[in-house]
Each structure stands twice: as structure tokens, then as C-alpha cells.
Image (cartoon, rainbow, N blue to C red; front, side, top):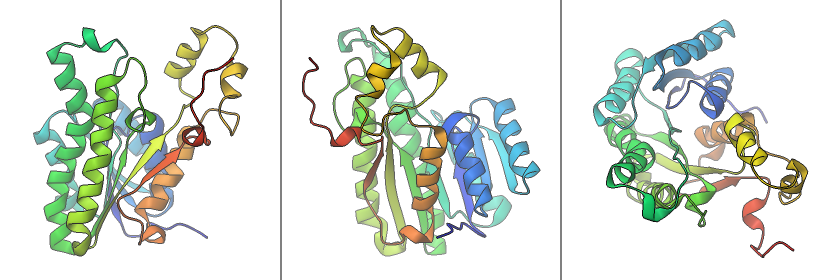
Length: 258
């Protein structure tokens, strides 16, 4: 099976690095034209250049996803430039760690806007376009923290859980318009930040890996490939679900380690 996104127009947020960058390259390799947004304008332009060097088509825009206006402009750029919007991949998100009682009101609003808010802004801008053209696909990145509690990530987890609920509502309300919405839940990913956190723990990295059924951390391409599948017509009857891409971690019973 060869997944194709030929002739599709895709918007991807947080596309300047990591999973967003890998998804931009994956989508373009499958034939999509990609409209890329990122808070760092220079890095997202570099990713667009990578796409074009590989023979694809890309447009890059600086975009602060906590701004409804900027997310709306990113989505509208796809419509204005290419005449349609087939795929919206809401990938932007993140949060610092810390105890719930130390979260300020300002922190709360920023974390919610960066995660759930950014998805809402993108969806709100994309839905009228997709309804008018008779269909489209929305993919969003949640987190294991949205499936179960993670200490130090209470507000982040609440926002990510909200993304899952919003996805189900989109599927239920707009499926009749040919619109699908699904969520990817990445597991522990092999990033510099996560490696740094691992290094702060007692024991060895291998101790951590042994708790993951697949025995390794995920890489950006693991998520990008699943996003590409969910964005494609191969998943035409998949709507309103959450797909854990975590090496089997979500399937484990949480019991105390001896």
C-alpha cells in the first residue's frame, strides 16, 4: 500500500521542527502541497526549502497559534493561494511541568490557548472552507497526558483531553459534510528535551525503555506516518478516534514498580 495525498492542500502548525517538520516532509513526499506555520519564521522557511529541494511545493508563514487571527490567516492562505483546504494538522502544543497549586492564572490561559485553543482556532477557520468544498480532514496531536494523569502536567492534560472531546464533536457534527477528525496521541519521544529529562532521573535510560513494550522511544517519523495515513483516503471511514502511537504504553496496566 502506498499512501497518497496527491493534489491535496495541507496546513500544518508547529512545522518548523520535530514532528511538525517530519510531517511536512512526509505529506509532501506523498504528493500534498503544504502550508506550514511556526512561531519561528526562519525555521519554518528552512523546512519549506527542504520540501521544495525534494521536489515538493510549500508555503511558509510565521504563526503564533495562541492568536486566533494568525491561525485564521494561515488557514485562509491555503484557500487564497491554492483554492481549497483538504487537510488541517493541528500539531502545535506544549507546556512546562510543575505542581498544580503553583500554576498561575496567566499560565493556565497560555497552556489552554497553546493546546486546545490553537486547535479550536484552526478548526473554526477550516470548517467553513471544508463545508463549502464538500469535505476535508482534520488531524490533531494530543498526548498521553490527555488519556491519563501525568504528575506536573495537570492543565496540559486537561487541554489535551479537551482536544479529544472536541475531535469527537467535530466527527459527530460534521461527518455528514464529508469532514473527518481524528487525534494522534504520541508516547515518549526521542527529543533533546525528553533525553534531558531522562538524564535527570535515577537509573539508566534502559530502565525506562524496558517499561515501553516496544523497547524504545518514538521518533518524529513514527507520528508523521500515522498522520499521513489519517489525512489520506485510506482512512476514509475512520472518524472521531484517538490513535495512541506510543509503542504499546497505553495498553499497560499502571502498577507500582518494584
